[in-house]
Each structure stands twice: as structure tokens, then as C-alpha cells.
Image 1 (cartoon, rainbow, N blue to C red):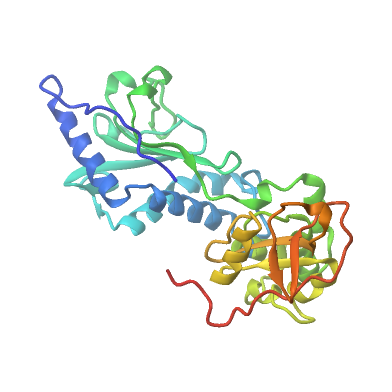
Image 2: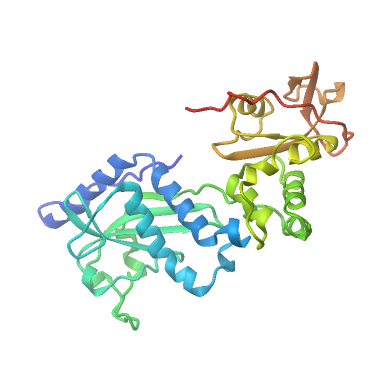
Length: 328
């Protein structure tokens, strides 16, 4: 969980105007004390740009140059929607009664500052999907702290030596994982080589075991640049049509965002699926050689997470999920 960065107040008799910065900081932390709302907004913004369900894309380098340039605007708009900031008089937002300009950069420290924001407050935001981290902080863009060179839009940047002046709200906080960036390339190649969406989803769930897979990831793999289907979660269902039924002969079970599924995942020391998430794993019947390995009981048998040396056997049916969804 993100933790607010502890820093002493910047305002005082010698620079009373930075009381505005501190008031904005207090307001933002009051709205989002653990950073989860900002983190979720950044995840949503990156997913919107990648648009995996329609394009099959999952990585920053797959975006067009114009899309990368547009990312800052998407983040700015989504933060305003999330927090319902009023528009500023001259800048993007009005927070605690003070104008604040929102600046996002994919490259840390390279926020492009327009002339009208000089000597005014900035909310600087950065995220790396590849590294899985993000940061957000406040800065008064004093003219003497800025590079004098300007681009053709007359935007300027913060000098590297003055980056420590940023009043961080959250620094290098965890970004909700994009699982497709954590899967080895050989496995990605095998997944996307499959011809049909169902085959790709099955391959994903067979190879990317023991990690959280979001609905967006499932949909991205199912589409893979083709025409998006109605609901990607339909590909997870049991029976002959879905992954649960088709992967059962391989010993693979798929936990979803149901409380009894989460309980089973916890018992096996696996990541718990969050809302709209899935965790697949291959199980095997518990044997003496498994010793004190965590296990669950299904169909009157004890099951453990299978290792490479364990035989492939028909997986048990997971607990009933109807009316079991966690609404907390």
C-alpha cells in the first residue's frame, strides 16, 4: 500500500506563499490518504491508451507517438473526474481554492511546464508500467529552478538539481500490475501464436500460473488485435466452452473474485484475486512427499500446488460460486 512521504512543511515567514502548496497537499492527502485512488486512476489511464480489448496491445512501446503525447491529457482528465476538481482560473484545477497545473511525464523529471504555470503550483505525476511504480508530488515552478531553453510550444522543464524541491505525496508507490509485462517473452510468443481467442486465453492460464490476471488482461489476450468479443469472462466459465472446463484435464483450476475462491487461494499461499481478477494454478493430490505444504480439501481429497515432478491429473471442481461474490 502506498504511504505518504513524510516531509516538513515548506512554508514559513521567509516564503509565506508556499503555505498554498501545503494547503493543497493536505487537501489531496485528505482525499486520498493511501494513494489508492491516484494509483487506480493511473492504471485506468494507461489501460485506456493501450486499449487492449480492441487492439491486443499491452506495452508502452506499442503505442503510436501521438498516443504517448496524449497520455498526459488522459491522466489530467481522469484525475479531475476521480476527484471532481473544479477547473482553475488559469490552470487545470482549483484545489483548496488554489490554481494547480497537472503535469504527467512518462520520463521521470521531464514534465513540460507552460509559461502560464511559471511561479505557480504544479501537481507532477509519473508512472512506469514496466517498473510497476508511480510518483506524485507538488512543486512551485519558480523561474530560477527551470531550464531556460524552451521547445516550440514555449514549454520548459525543471532543472535536475531542483527535483529534490518537489513535495512528494507518494514516491515510487506500487502500480497495479500489468501481468503481460511480467510473463517471459517465450511464453508470450506461445500465447499469442494461438489462432483463436479461447486458445490464447487457455494458453495464458496454463503458463501464467500463480499470478493475478485482470479482466483487462484476459480481454487483451482474447482479442490479440482482432475484433473484441462481448465479455471476456465468458471464456473462463466451466463446461466444454470455457477455460475452467477445458483446462481441468491438465489439473488447472482458476480462482476468481469470489470469497470462497479467495479463501482457497489464501490456504494455498497464492495471491488472492481482487475484483475482476483471476489466479490459475495446477493442483495435484497431496502425497507424503509434499510434507507440510499448504493444501485445500475438495471432492473428499486434499490438494496441493503441483510441482514439475507431480503427475498431471484431473483437477477438482472448485466450490460453488453462485451468490458467493464478495461485495465488501
